[in-house]
Length: 352
Image (tube, rainbow, N blue to C red):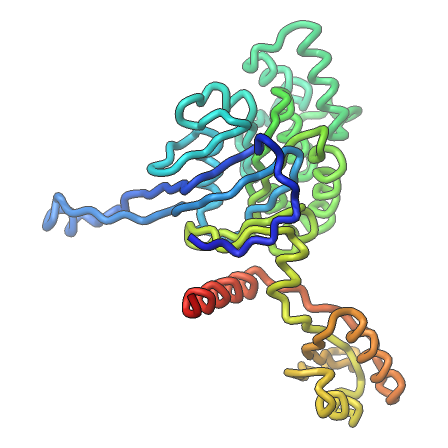
């Protein structure tokens, strides 16, 4: 399988994760009538198909894809919760099939809708309970629990009942629980899904500053938010219908498939200055939106040539007397990113 790759990370001798042609399929459930008519017939669907990539130690790696792309299934295979049908996956050299006990000592999965916390217990009691399950005892347990509480910023709130915690605090507690075993790889499955925008922003900052890094965990985060992945991750992999479409440095991938589209709010969407810019080829594909409640109108257009060209367009509009309230780059949505990568692969295949 050809993968669009812009990997700017220098590979190490032993990657944190190494996936080679990894595949997993599930049997499709059939209705009663179909089962009675053809009892031996069966159909299968691939949740993950022929996925190959490496994740380097200390890297913050994003797994980007819509619901149903195969992200959760891939995580379950890496955490040894389900077995691959084909291919292989290793965690710091330990094979998920041949050495599952070794893998489980290094990998900690964290799900957004985790129901494993005991809401009637305090955070401290929760962590002590799970520390016991991890075979930590006495002074070692007390020291480790206090350490992870400090890492996630919950010291001072550890005696509060978890049921009184905010969503963001519960997510931090889940991270604390995962860190009890000192994992080398942390798998985060849509960790900000249930958070409000402010809490999600704070949680992303916490992950970047306190959890990930060369001397901390390798973090693999599954998300369906292109904005979140591009903002937070060193590299991203785009997964669609179980297949890996592209992998590369987050911003490089965005620049490769973005069309440099800008949104400008103005009171004069039909000013002659717009037509002059179009005639000179400095802007293209201009679209005018509906007038907003405050009288300003959004105008979108494509500006090729990067930020320098965008600055010149803005300067020309202002010099022409066009009133401009906002001038911002339109972020690439996940749907647009996937559509463009698919189109790029189809074009490359046609020319091969």
